[in-house]
Image: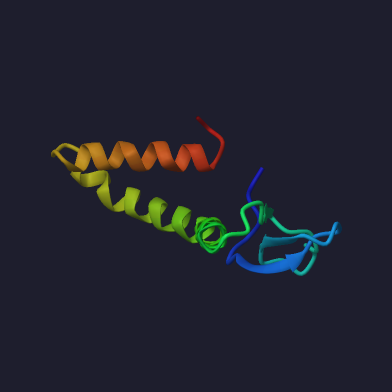
Amino acid sequence: MKHTKGPWAYNDRLAEDGDKETAVYGHSKHLSEPVCVIPHDDITENGYKEVKANARLIAAAPQLLAVCKRAKELLVPEVTKEPDRTIFWELVAAIEKAEGKS
């Protein structure tokens, strides 16, 4: 199965129970439900900043995956050299994790 097409975006909203949460949405005309929802359990300013940072990272996931795949292809000719070999295998592992292959 493939992930929801990017780009993804996020915004704050009210949950059904009236609490605030941050929702991450994919780019799809047919998708009315968010990709994920991050509740605002910690209502301090630092807690809110952490929620926003997590939402930004999640929203960037499709773009980050695409860039990792392109970088992996560029490194293929260089994998005989260190540190390129280590970076290459780290990219492979991250891509496989994102695609549910590891």
